Length: 220
Image 1 (tube, rainbow, N blue to C red):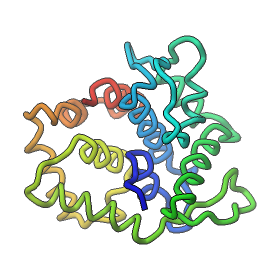
Image 2: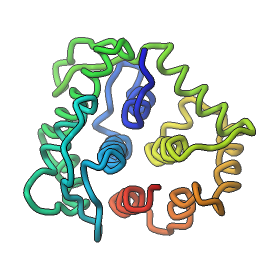
Image 3: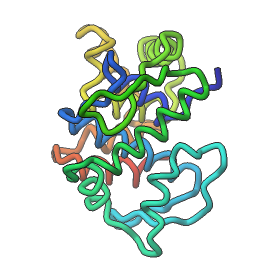
């Protein structure tokens, strides 16, 4: 099994035990989009300026699972991040979100990281139950970097913050471990690699749109 990317690691942790990204958890859905925006930015596919995203490069073949989000952003002009969030989470049908979930989930299924299952009667996309090994490997990586003494990578910091904003950490870590993680993150705030962490933690605005704008604009 290949190493998972940021949005893929977030995905296997964010879906529930039935393999569904709950429509009742806006936070988890918004953070899935945030993870996709981050990957596109880091790959040089989009640029972020003044809280707007614009396509700046071709989508690599090995990032095909991001194509729905990339195609949506490829409008020939910058798109406000607030509109991105609204379009992905404000629709009654959830079509765009379902397309992204199916793209990421389908890619992971091809890699053996999740098991695709038949959609429920009211589901707009298939369900993707994480492979136990893929999930445990992701969680243990977080535990090793955040609860150990090794160097904390920017990708890990971003993943932890996405999982925290998506209210996922409590599913895998005890209150004591979560407390240790926050202390570990705080310890690296003053470092160059801690810029993303610092800006998010110091923010007093709980609006998820502002969080995404900060997350994408300031990462690395």
